Image (cartoon, rainbow, N blue to C red; front, side, top):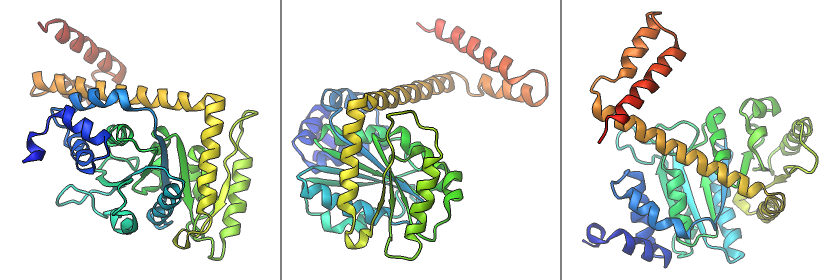
Amino acid sequence: MRRSTASVPELVERARSGDPRAVARLISLVEDASPLLREVMAGLAPYTGNAQVVGITGSPGVGKSTSTSALVGELRRAGKRVGVLAVDPSSPFSGGALLGDRIRMQEHALDRDVYIRSMASRGHLGGLSWSTPQALRVLDAAGCDVILVETVGVGQSEVEIAGLADTTLVLLAPGMGDGVQAAKAGILEIGDVYVVNKADRDGAEQVRRELRTMISLADRPEGSWRPPIVLTVAQAGQGVDEVAAAIDEHRAWMESAGELDRRRVKRARDEVETIAVTALRARWGDVHERSELDDLAEQVVAGKTDPYRAADALLDAFTELDAARP
């Protein structure tokens, strides 16, 4: 009953006081694209911008969930409140999160200063859910000092996390491919900290050498951040303190270089653009059962026009439609 009757201001106030039920309800409103979403975001806005967002990415099997759990423990020992968004593949039956990474983080289940949420990607490429940016705002406003975002692990499509996080951790493991595969996956462009997990296996040092060589070949401006490479055995907790230290060092560098503000402005710009484009598509679809876009697409296929002229025609049509609105 409380879930259905609580107002948005009440939910926001309860979330700010650390009520996990209120946080869960707000994130559910985000995931469901509730009509209350605008009110939710407006209520949260004054309390956001404090949390450090750390993205954790890497191919399936490198130990992302185990590493995330170990990092949560290290952050809690430092007295930080932690939020975790574990973005899982979607179930083809329910549409919900399939893997349920909270199973691997049971040791933190009773800690009121740790909030863990599994979110379904719902077919969204790039390793993230479309609602992840809004869910981050909920956890930020709820007082989390650090928010860990663990991606699906979809390989070469996974670079989207770099646009969402303040610091991106890229996990690798021995036997998961050589340096060429790492370059193909695009991870050498997005990593702020590289973690070679399962370092107790043969080949860990080779992976670190290959990574160091590949990183050294990158054309980096003088004074830019040089990503460290940390060896860990997450299951045993080895090296996790070095990962946490590297995250802190990267945060300090970003603040001194102005990079933190630049990344956050870009993130907000992309979020605003996505919301605006989605709204435009929805408004167009409300008016046209068969959209002008469908007709223009058929003309392009038939060779009657080219894509640029079709795009111009679509913009003109929308301008006319918008001008005709009361």
